[in-house]
Length: 295
Image (cartoon, rainbow, N blue to C red; front, top):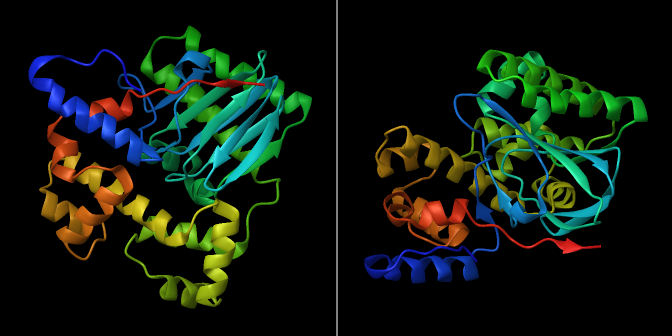
């Protein structure tokens, strides 16, 4: 649970926040990118491990030592040194446990910067959760690239280094077997048009609605409807942050009405949209950490 709650008038908000964490199994926590840089590399610190969360930024996890276990959706995956994990925007994920010698680099870019870096290969971040086993040479190369930005302070140099790393990692990703074709197509369609229906996805993918749902749930660990709701919510939050009204943002994000947006927001994040944007709830959600289980 979050620490250092304020006293007095904030106690009511604190109680709301405590209740929120009891009902929201998956939190919205943006990838932490500091300052004006559009990409960030963090080194794993057990004391700042995040609980199950999702965000709009695509993310890579490079394991350089030890072993651990990640959870995503209803699934879990064991990882060890030399593994590269790729999380697509909106995909929940969590480091469940790790050995004492576990070491990990966490890399994230803003969606816009990722698209610019990858160019014609920008859809690669919409292929779902992917685990790659790197060769020792590939691991050494990426780990060295992860360390470089920490020693160079200017924004341009850092962004160039993070962008080169991102491009190289996705070049490795192209050599592995990804999820089912219907899942990849569903992810691309939903990220382009969050309001798209399952039937329309199936029609454009030349499959049946049942096939689309089955393969998506197997590859992503969660239903297509839940993922589509997250993508709409992420777009809604971004639009409100940019100055849109709640109503305009809801419609532009793909919801049929503000009332539908309100219901989905409450069910997914555990609070009403207005409370999220005007109270301390959002800050508390983003600053929540969870203990790491040793292995």
